[in-house]
Length: 438
Image 1: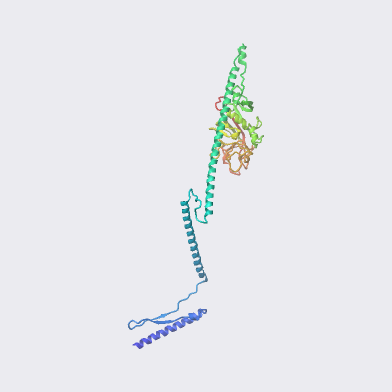
Image 2: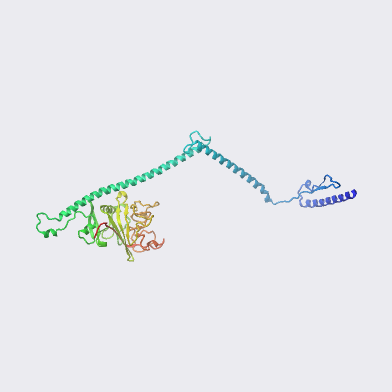
């Protein structure tokens, strides 16, 4: 029995050996570069017997597969990832150290600054920079507060100056008006030497001072003509009076008819006035100021386009400040048919704005001069919804809207950029006392 078993085992071992030899030959043909010591190491090992059977273990050579060359970069990628991990860990440590140092500094410092002699060695420069930045921020804040205080004080000074000047001027004007009224009332009375009542009645009433055109209307002048007015005891000048529109008594401040006068003028020109009182003119900012401070005035604006459409705008208050206050405009409530273009919107509001000319920039546009851009003098905002001193165009025009402009005119604001823009044939600004009754 044992002999048979041995024979069977020998046959099996020989068969396995033959198989391995054949496999080894094939492997040698496919991989000729491998060293001879790695060719098919065959080992036959016996294990402890259990009963009548003693198992044997055959170790076959490992399987070798050649991979593409690209797999060789995996090791490099692993190395780079490891380097990145080390860098991240280093950064984390630095951040933690910085945070700890910052916490220590806040505990030691006062008002956000380190006290002298504190902080780690080598951090003095950082502490100095931090201190300088804090000082700069504090100075910047103080400068901003100082600027706000200056603006407030300047506004109060302007108001005080305006109030004081207006009070003095109004006081003087009232005294002169009272004196004039007394003289006019006495002038119509007959003296003891007058014996003929008819002569007394035929004598005209003499007015010493005519503040504006409404005074001439009151004494019977009904023709639209030029008259001399004296809104200030020391100043008198010629004006054109409209005695027909809405009952008459209007003092004309500006007139546009035919484009005969160029309104692209300097600050001094608009201050003194220019043009022809019977055609086109600007009365002058100084004169407008005197007229509007002597009495409470209303403003009427008459407009006519080249299609014959006539509309008007009426404001129940109109005042222009003096040159010191840059001829600032004050307008009241609107009524009329042309629309309230002087107070078009929050961003285009000419009320309470200073006067600007091409050579004197007082507008609210931060990037330039509206007067220079639109070729005129006006109470520009940033920039305009109205400009009655623009260029006179005899027909529609293209380009910059620098013609006579009233933003609430029907169809005026619908013009697209680059398209033709409409202008006006006639424009007129005039004032009259608020309590005047024709």
